[in-house]
Image 1: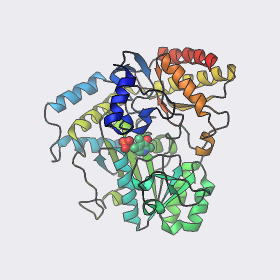
Image 2: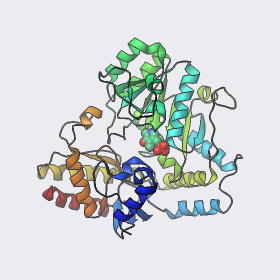
Image 3: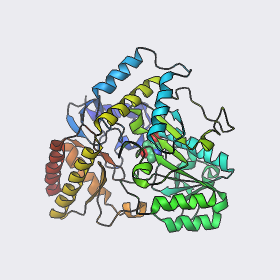
Image 4: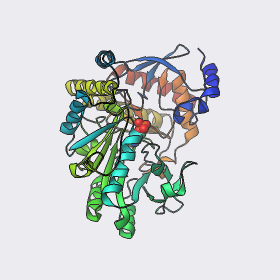
Length: 425
Ligand SMILES: *Cc1c(COP(=O)(O)O)cnc(C)c1O
């Protein structure tokens, strides 16, 4: 079926024709792609094309699409009932797995989306500290709960303004915004308002302004300053967790122990499943043992837990991380080299198999520098590659993901097609 026709039908019954905004291709123009099926690193579109997929459901499909073992686990579980509203043994196993794999994770609660996990972490931080303010970083995305939909004010160190209509001034009045990687700004905010700040929330490796790694000392600095002022450190690892290695980023690479941690995407194995966890003294303040409320009809959903557990099992057995990282760095070097040879102002920033083609030559360390990118050039590259059978993120400010199903041939294919695109843009 033609995508144009599908999109026009979709627009009549779904706002903007999509169930999540980035899918509408507003960042790159043109008609969005509709997918009918996926297998490994490939997706089949509704108009009959086969594409190599570098979205991988924003990293959730770390094993590639329709992994046979994950599919079998889902099928087996589905036949036994998919939700009860009653505790199940496997959610205990799932929590035990996460707590044993992530140092510092004493307790964990399963929820159905990253948005929910963050919303709970923020409520918990406020509840246990008795403070209202939250400090987040410009360009980091933490789901679509009201308090997180904030953009930086005109001055860098001002309270944020809402980045969405329908979010009250009150809902964001307690959210401060600082530039990512700017420890000096964080220190200044704490010096002025330290006693009011309940928590700092950060994506250890930022993935929602394109891929932007933390600079040396940034995360450790956040840990030190939050501890000093009695605020909590929340690491939002909805993308990071189990993506760069078989644990949290903060434990494996960041060398920091957050008070609260959110997980999502990878741990759900392609089903709606996320988690919020952390130190016992904080987590035990959640209902029913504590006074901070949180609940969910489908929380710890058996079907999702089956997919998540199987994904973790396969990751642990196959340990695809170093291979994904090797493919990712070969790709990043190749793309940056080809861009330079062809005189394009494009650099590939990557970390362990996650990458963004930034259409700028300035170093990208935060949202301001990410925004120096030429988004029109990105759109041309995106469409040039899409025409040639490659699906990249349909926005300059998102990450691309290599799965364990991607091969060296895929990397060579992307490089040769990118070279062809370079000559046309
Ligand atoms: C995707 C994402 C979320 C939101 O998760 P949903 O499951 O889409 O609600 C939160 N935080 C980060 C860092 C994310 O990448």
